[in-house]
Amino acid sequence: MGRLSRAAGRGAARLLPAERRDWAEAIWAEASEVPSALERLGWLTGGAWLIARESLMVRRVRNTILFAVAAACLAWTALPGTPSAFITANIWLRAIGTVLVLAGLPWLVRRRLGAVIDSRLARSLRGGTFAGIMALIVALARIDRITNTPRQLAAAGPHNQPSIGLVGMWLFFLVLVAGYAAGILAVTAKRSWVTSTTLSIGAGTGVALGVVMYAIMPLGFGQYATAPWLRGSAIDPVVAIAWILLFGGPLAAALLAGWRCSGSVGALVPAEAKIRQGVAAGILVTLVGSLVVCVLGPATLASFSWLAHLLYAGQHLTSAAIAHRASAPFSPGAAGYSLVWFFFPIIGLGIGAMTALAAWGNQAARRQGQGPGGGGPGGPDAAPEPPPTGLHADTDDVPSSVAIGLYAGTRSY
Amino acid sequence: MAPRSGFSAQTLSVLAALCSQPSQWQHGYVLAKQTGLKSGTLYPILIRLADRGLVEACWQDEPEPGRPRRHLYRLTAEGLTTAAAAMASEAAAQRQATRPRSTTAPGLTASAQWVG
Image 1 (cartoon, each protein chain N blue to C red):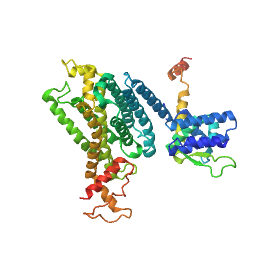
Image 2: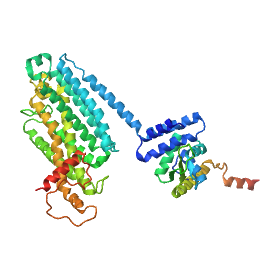
Image 3: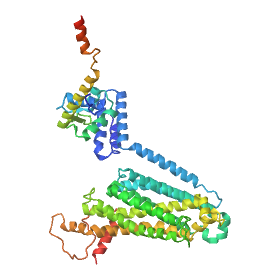
Image 4: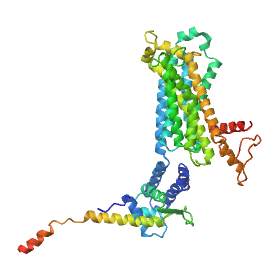
């Protein structure tokens, strides 16, 4: 059998997990013993099928096709309906930029943190995040078409003309999209050492947060309650629940996820594993919550005119007027969603990290103090020290890097 | 009726081929010829058996000149026990399935003889 064929076999074997590569190379090497060319072809075909099955290639091909179909639908629905050149460019750039980000990020995350955790929840979180982001782009495109007709653009003057500020806002939006996708991809990757229990706790709390936030602000923040199902003082307890979920959700999720984690996880010793679960649960709560409310809100604006009439019964407002009020630059509605989109993950990450470090930071520090030689107990009042290098945290892993930085900061007091 | 072994017919054929020379290392192509299985069927079976600890695998120490080294397989001690039990179970199940049913009750034969 030729060198080329053997090289192809070795290359194909690299598609498999490490523990399976020997088998792929074995089947390729055995082909040398098959006497006839036709039989050898059949033997190698069996080998190719084995590699496809064991490398989960079938699933990858399916996911690639699904993504391509979703991207095509996104591109088609983002086709502009108004002749405004700037809005056309804005909608297209936002759609194309998002597709490129979502196409490239999984590959980058895989190189650093490995493939997705082998659980349905992890795959659902990834699929749901990508679908939600694409739905958001479609909704924003529709809102732009509704609210930015040429007459309105002309009337708006320079604020809605192409400018560095608007281009900067578009780029900033794309960075946030990448951040959300990267965050979900990271916490659902194998080498992030996040357990399925942590994913359940974080995602479940996040969905609750998102639903409550949407219930009180389906069309964004306003000077008065915008939800017809929560009129007057009935909205107050729901607003209280929203505040509790926003700050208490990451805290409770971090504590619960860390408490549920017993023993080592992957390369992490128990205390470090607990901290990792706490940080991951905290950020997951607000990532998921923010995605839920920021997708449902604009989707409501863009698609459900009947809801607009329900919310503003008797006022005879058109969908365009509602959308414009809620989404025009610097409107209360747009500001509300922008605040959620930007600040929620920061809140979740900060609270999750601080909670996890407060609960298990000392255990991790004691383990670091023992060192590889199994030295004596650490001093109770150690001097301020640099970020602990004995921890098994991956410094390229954002949650752990932040956790280590926060830990170092607290130890300096 | 005797319980079946829990292995598929193809897996049993692979176990039988490995049992024929339990202490000898065997090549994949030889197993394929003995069992009549194609490579795409044989190797997943070997992988699953190895995952369960019933088969052990290793690379050939000294390959033939000009040829790549080959992967070798044989049953482990646990594999040998399991294979023997599986084949015995399967044989018993097949015997029971093929046993002919009796067409007359014993009492009839005796009374027929008494009358005769």
